[in-house]
Amino acid sequence: MAQISRRDFLRNATVVASAATALHPSTLGADTAKRTNVELAIATICFDGFGDARHEPTFRLAPSVGIENLEINLWHPATLTPRYLDGIRERCADKGLKPVSLQGTSFAGGDRHAANLDIAHKLWLMRNARDLGCDVVKFTGRKRGTAGGLNHIIETCRELAPAAEDLGIALVLENHAGNVLENLEDYETIFSVIDSPNVGMCLDTGHFEGVGIALSDVTRPFRERILHVDLKDCAAFGAGHNTVVFGEGVTDFDTFLNDLIGGGYSGFLVVEMAWANPKEPLVANLTAARKLFAPYVKS
Image (cartoon, rainbow, N blue to C red; front, side, top):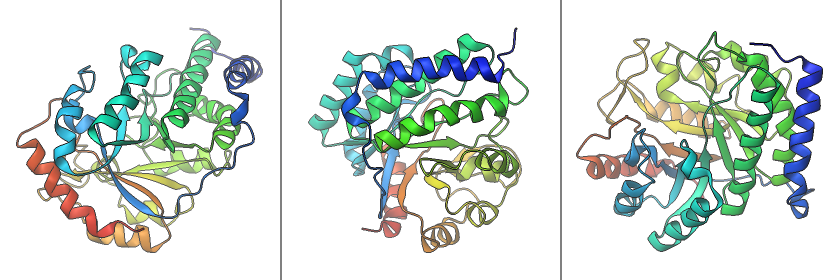
């Protein structure tokens, strides 16, 4: 596959970005919202798993858990249409839920066509996040060693950062075992180049501990760049990513959250008990998670 040069990447990405932001000129110049509190949220993946359930389990079960704020996973083509996203707004209102974050599929990579699609996809979700009232859009990277890699993420974020600032959206990069957003060095490389306050880290506790990275080694050097947090309990430190029910793993949430929040973190703590097929008793486990993390909410 032909690799895209930086000059071609920037030329093509700028065309796509200009076209997308031109659709909504009223948002340009908007102040970036700085959240000053800590709120609990829950991810739709907890209820829907990895398949395309059109969020039916989420809207059936989430109201029973008692967490109003919702991170919505939009991983399937049918969930990206204007009609579907309008339906998300209506379903949230009907069930007393509040969309606060959108998670899309990972960064792509490769030639200029892939770059164009990636820019358009991320801008589309950023624009729809703002329309839904969300503050955050979240993506991770591709498997390490595949097309694009870390350089593609850097170049894409370089182009997306001004739009994120204009829209008042936090564009967060989630760590994931085995992909190009995995180690502390990956984030050091990105943040040495991308200094926008709207581009930051989504700290996933389970993925960091799964690959043997202590959470304290993340919070201390990246305090200013941690904009979003996914809460998972890790089965065993350094033994690979393996999520278990909260309370059954090794993650020391009290030490981690006191350090994180005491160091000035503000934003969402997202309950993300993520399995391909959710495990029962689902509502009881997630309700217990709400009670576990409620003391860390800060208004």
